Image (cartoon, rainbow, N blue to C red):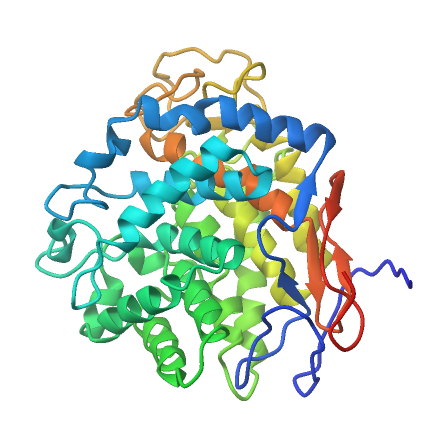
Length: 432
């Protein structure tokens, strides 16, 4: 066995990968690392403790208290009902919590929701609430489904469920048939990186699907421009969207370095202006604001976990340890501070580097852009709606990305954590 400590791994565009896991198939550009199937990494020590707190805390018990997660009344199960982003946010993290820990109750509940959603797809490929078909001035709102597709990908990689691939193909065919103007509508306009990542995942697991790459090109050309600067200063939009050029760089053929460089430029622009406080985040208490960049500011809980997710994806694409370092800084600083420290039964909307009074009072000196209370620990089903439902992917995704398969049939210990990994390595069919 050979062990090397490296700061960056690069892969030539003409390299032949010997990885035992799904790699980018031509004409996509190769990447140095592949994600292992959920469940391959078994966390231990402190991280396992955090995951157990999550099972017994707010995320694990959220379906018992959130009126957005009532199965029979949810539009993701019954399209005649209404729903939006809350169930997709929650299920994305909750399902992977089950895959990582193997907790039987978590797995059973996640499986029930996924079964119900997969069964709800309509003949034209649409799934989810019917009202979302026309909710953006007569055109579909594609944003809420974006996080949900991550749960389907994890479910397939963990369970090899044969329903997932045709479900996703049919859904993306529906998106492909829409007028290009729809790609600039709603929250999705700046968050298509989520779907580009999923489409690449799908392309690598199918054949005769070059139309998926054409769809990525169409989305990139007709959605928000992350190449020439930032199209938004909203903290969660930035956390999700700045990786879009790097993802698109995998589709560009011949390779064009300006796409990957644009992601680095966007990151530096944000962190040079608003990242000047400890903890790994940036000052984005809703939107980044000129003059509000010091340690009294904070970052949304949504922003923390979305930023970690982007760093994990960028590590696999670039092989650059810079992204690993940023992810670990968030994971061991801002993310733990976002939950009450004893039973993880509460979160808050904003986590600050310097904040000595976590009270349930709106601030009056323009410390934060929003004029409602955002600092106290509570379940916040309605007060902190998005963050309460979205934070659950933080620890499970961190555990899953701790080890990565390498393009040459090896393994990379990527993120710092006590863990065990089971994976194929070596030549030919590999050794487990």
